[in-house]
Length: 215
Ligand code: HEC
Image 1 (tube, rainbow, N blue to C red):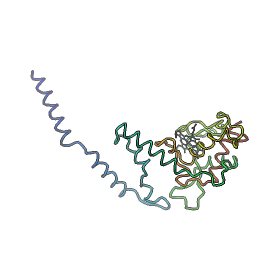
Image 2 (cartoon, helix red, strand yellow):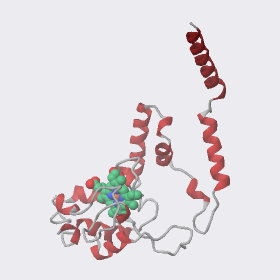
Image 3 (cartoon, helix red, strand yellow):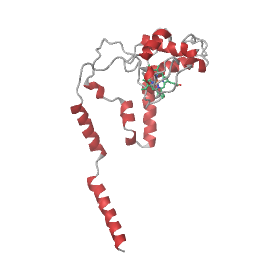
Image 4 (cartoon, rainbow, N blue to C red):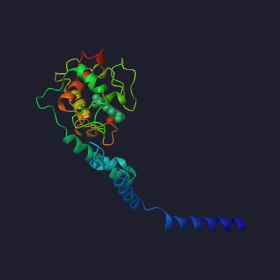
């Protein structure tokens, strides 16, 4: 009898605690936003504008703030916005030189506060992907891109048959969120990390039948 009374009291206390003292998620969010503004300091080219989130970052940083249905709709919208923003090659040529592509994929330079606006950025692709098997130092956050073109049957990247995969690959590298709103992959073209010519070279690394990736 005494035990039952105690348990009921404990539950009552707990419930009261929740109602009165639980953190309000909205207030916490505002506090966090303030904290970011006061604790982050601009340094060199890394300025405070990097804290501004676009619609994709807002959605994917806080997915629990949405109901399942709302999230699905918002995710679709984010993908549409990002796909519509993809800049396709201005001269219609998708592939450059795979050798330069390999160097760009290897390089993780650029965009830090010790870099300057003139630093040539790398693509940092090996940080997350296996690409050429000769490079054994690579990350595994993304899928292996070894034999990328070969596995997808690309024998002539300029053929009509190859067009869908060539266009998808360009779109994915330019803006990974065009196909997956909450992708962990940086939006190389969209965010100005790589320019059009650099993306062409990386495309060749993945899709040129002469690239070591496709041997
Ligand atoms: C921070 C990690 C990260 C970096 C850096 C990164 N990627 Fe990715 N990449 C991913 C992840 C994760 C996926 C799979 C999930 C998704 O985005 O759909 C992916 C998917 C891909 C795909 C699609 C593969 C397929 O079969 O559909 C391609 C192509 C690709 N990455 C190329 C690149 C290239 C080229 C670079 C360098 C410019 C690069 N990635 C840099 C994480 C990364």
